[in-house]
Length: 139
Image (cartoon, rainbow, N blue to C red; front, side, top):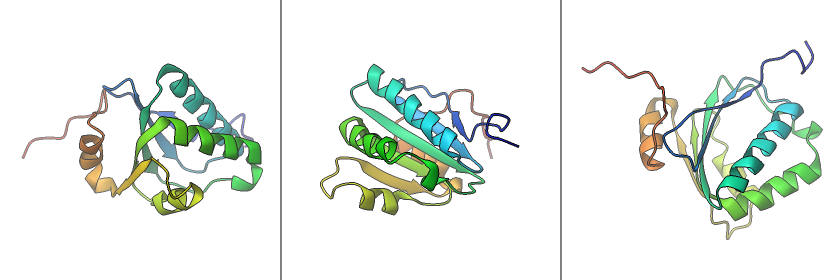
């Protein structure tokens, strides 16, 4: 199956905050998926000077880093530094350490990783909630 026939690995999550960019990363991320992600982020930056980000990893199966343009990666890092305040990563893998090392030591972005079972804590940390999320049964 080629990338035009595959299901996108980057899927938006609707939230109650319009300045929160929330996505699911599902399965394998192709270069086309990554380019699409950077485009979605640019649209969010155009609407809001500062945003927070939630990234929920679902059955993650790697990223085609070698196929993503160096210019896209550099521009993505610069724009992230200009616009992102907090970034919550939910699930595995925890790539927050790699992200911190890829950015300058003085980066203003606050990264935090949450295990999948601690997702509710991630939403609290971001002062947000997913819209249309299935309610958990009460105990």
